[in-house]
Length: 117
Image (cartoon, rainbow, N blue to C red):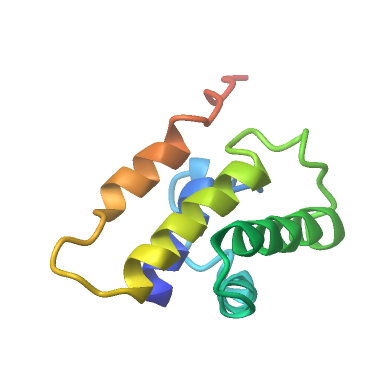
């Protein structure tokens, strides 16, 4: 489950490090547990998405020293929705799980193109 969560965080890439070739995987690993903790705090979907969004905002502002407006990707609110959809899908195992490529595509659809200097 953490491998999939890592893929989602790396696709979101709020620090924009993965647009550089050769950047090692794992840049956001220290934030995976915090994301999972937010899911476990409540069974209510709406509240869960709000808790995840607050966690993401704290990470952006206190750890990354970024403002939500400055990131060039999916907003924390929308990324929280993606993470919540992923968590709900994985928490209730069934035969037809939501493919990771669909979640990653949802994240990538909001990325701004890389500016060439």
